[in-house]
Length: 56
Length: 145
Image (cartoon, rainbow over all chains, first blue to last red; front, side, top):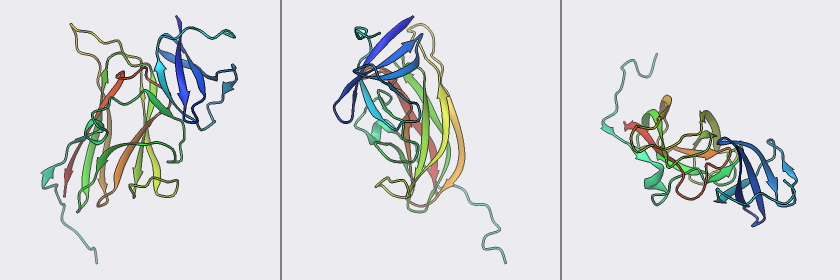
């Protein structure tokens, strides 16, 4: 089952952590840009049952 | 001529936790993908003034955390930086569903290292484990020399 975490990056921008059955399958910026696993980022989940983004 | 031919043992237990170092927070909701010791790190343990023997870290799920990886860093300074803080080990933490009728899985990372005096252990998470209060209680089992 696909679910979405709403996240906030340390620069106060927002994004999403896409989950499938409890495992992260992608981290995205608010505009839908995928964050590479090699990219260094920090973020905090603020809603672990968020509404899916429009671009999903 | 060897400097020390006799084994030494810790003199007192030095159990510590991320909760005691971070105002009782359950850790995991905040992810930090930096692997060079930069960014926000969560303090888990501080070695004693004569050093400490660190046996293991124990990860107990709180609520129902999502899968993630926990990274353990050794740091020579409370001011973490890429030069003073070194990635030491990682542990895979699977998704866990809490139960009120059965014990949830607990995960242990064996360390078995002698830590230099006042050195520190920090942890980070590769992805978020969920909302506030959903994550891990991490306890470090050690003894001070």
